[in-house]
Length: 114
Length: 114
Image (cartoon, rainbow over all chains, first blue to last red; front, side, top):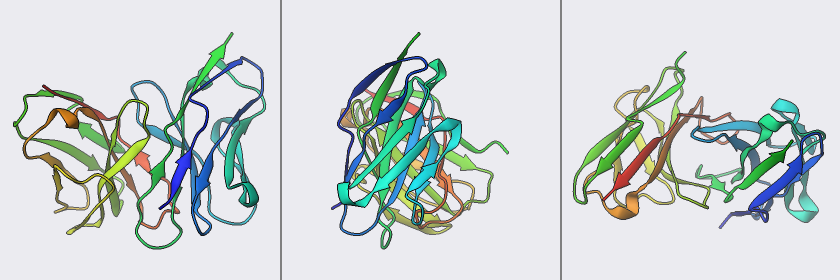
């Protein structure tokens, strides 16, 4: 069965600092990978996704993520964090074949200090 | 486009009561799904539909029923509410099933079962 691990429950960064949120997955074949952001009281919004091809994926709001097959990772990065980036971030995986049932990580809460 | 809409925003039920959570989308999306989100956990898929008249179970379907009589609507029914169903429920839609599309999430319904 596929699984997703986000090892950091909370991450605190200063505004303007760089950010990396970790995501590791367990799946036999190449999965489809996603990062979502959830602001308080809101639904999820897709930041970026990876299906195939270039392993460095650009998303919205200045985010990017890199798929590393050898490490089973799909870490999210941003070079300079803004206070408005404070939110909950979820990594998700979907199998590239068969039934479409996504698996979400438990989320990482990003706190941004001024 | 209104996107994905959910009603109600909040609901309090007593154990054993029934209710229907409404979800509608005006984007002509074929794929719709229901998730629940519990504290400290990612989203878990309850049921999904790949088109009108077609529904299937997700990861946590017990206690919930769905139907898809139209492309636009995908209601979630709780036949006999239990405290374990206290959660935030999100509806989502995307153009086609298969995992390569962007999912659009509704704002959520907060449900408390006493």
